[in-house]
Image (cartoon, rainbow, N blue to C red; front, side, top):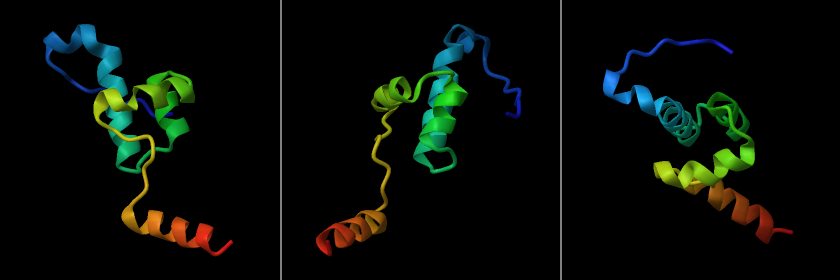
Length: 78
């Protein structure tokens, strides 16, 4: 894993874990990280990370409209 140093205001120092979790959640939301990768970044289990996604306004189910349509078509064809 690569380490990136991010300068944040001193007022955020006490919120270190929350800041990392927020960034991980947003990277998951944007599709840059898988759930497992984002959970690792946040140093949480997948389950715990998935449970806190809503705290950051991120949906656990991360389908685009096209992906959802394709999945529904696949299920309908069974």
